[in-house]
Image 1 (cartoon, rainbow, N blue to C red):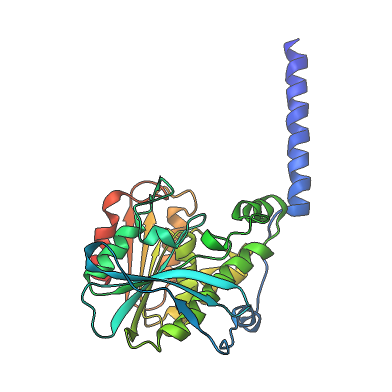
Image 2 (cartoon, one colour):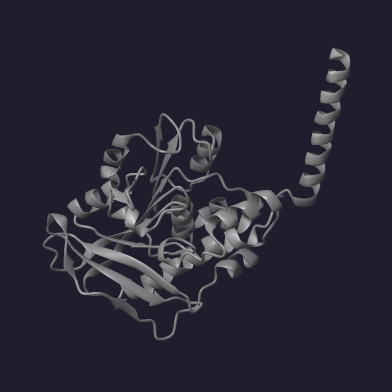
Length: 306
């Protein structure tokens, strides 16, 4: 009996392995190549004619700061939504921090300790508080397919399922590329505002937002510094949105990488390789124990970055 059971289990394992091999051959993501011209074409962005950002009235918020909700029609006719918060007592042009949220989150995570009764475990609202205390305005948008921009018929969960199960990368790459473009469109408006110091614009992102911040910094000369907080490892299986493809554009900029020793989305070796590949000498690598959710005190370590 035991021998028969063993043979049966071995046969099942063999069938499972064979099925896995067939699935991988048919649907597994594989690296692909993009020439520099093709990469630039994927990220190319023409100025938006007649760009108009609609701003709600300024409102007073905690700490004496002032905030406005904003909306604009982006390069492809889709509406982008977000918020800008000005530091207390701001009277002239102020530097700006762009906040890019993680997957499944929204721009509210840059202002609120919880949203819909769920805590902001990435603590990005504390980065906003730190930035405001240093005299920065903070500006954040909902990423494509997130927050007020969700498509109930094609959610992020659908996008990631199709990516990992069926090897369909197009929707994920489009979501990331188009969100980065939205920020670049918004910068076209922001740098013309008398309240904003166009010479000092920084970008900070958490997880997927860190991936986007690296891409934004690599593409847009108006970004002077990037703080990439636990970016996922993205290689040439997603070449169009792999930060490694655009690192040259970060030359001369201040870039800090914050990583975790046991991150399920990027190994310690992968994080070190990313840091080593960053150009220039104005870079730092802050390592933290634990996984993708960094320990509570990590935000204070960012103070010198400002």
